[in-house]
Amino acid sequence: MNGKENVNEPQSELNSEVDAEANLEQAAQTPAERVSATLEEALDKYSIELEPYQVEMLKDYCQLLWDWNEKLNLTRHTDFDRFVSRDILDTLQLADLIETGIEVLDFGSGGGVPGIPLSIIRPDLQVSLCESVAKKAVALDDIITKLSLPVPVINARVEDLLNDLNYDVIVCRAVGPLWKMGLWLAPHWHLFGQLLTIKGPAWTEERKAARHRGTLQDVELRKLKSYPMIGTDSESVVLKMWSSHKAEPPHAS
Image 1 (cartoon, rainbow, N blue to C red):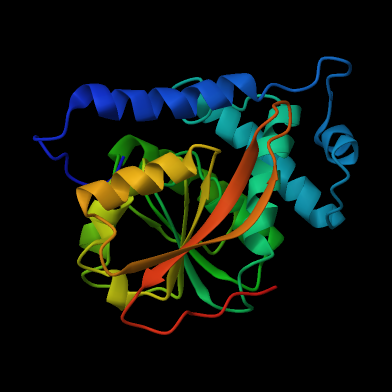
Image 2 (image 1 turned 180 degrees about the horizontal axis):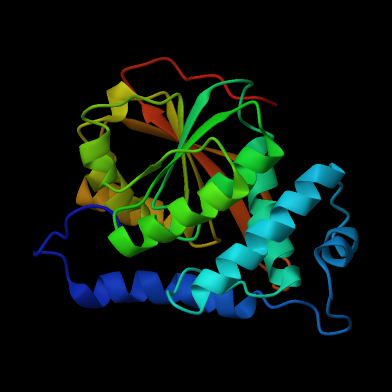
């Protein structure tokens, strides 16, 4: 997790926000009628079409990620159905919104989602991964090296990294509630184009909490799209955030 903890924040409130995300993950189980034995089967089940070379690279990524996951907790999505219905589906939502050929930072990358699948699905993008936990950064670097992807892995807190580097788009998923993201990025909104983040159905409550804490001052927030969270009755959303001191940055449509 990136950013410094605010010692004045009630731990019980933070725990409830984390628990809510974990409960959604637990609820979003694959439909029980048929378990996919291969990535190809899972892609077909969810009507996702990719280039053959992309499928092969994603299979290699799955194997590398799951091998590392036996030594280090990187993902709960350890079968093809959950990988496709959550990780690939979320990545595709982001991929459709990012313009061609720009620089993208995935912060709090963890096991590499969405950054690694995004770099495979959108090879025109210049993707970098930012991970503050050293052991996870080592795992990501090993995975990237074995996949031969031109993706830098930076072991740093996002707020420290943005002191030196700028990006057109920052993407993230499941790194923390909106108030914490606003806290981490507060000094830097004017230094990058926009943030695209994936959230669950509790995003409106997160927005309210962030506004109450004052961590989204001078930040514009817009919901770009919503889509079903497969296996639940809930929806995921893609939120776009940018500095209110700048015109709204463009996104693909």
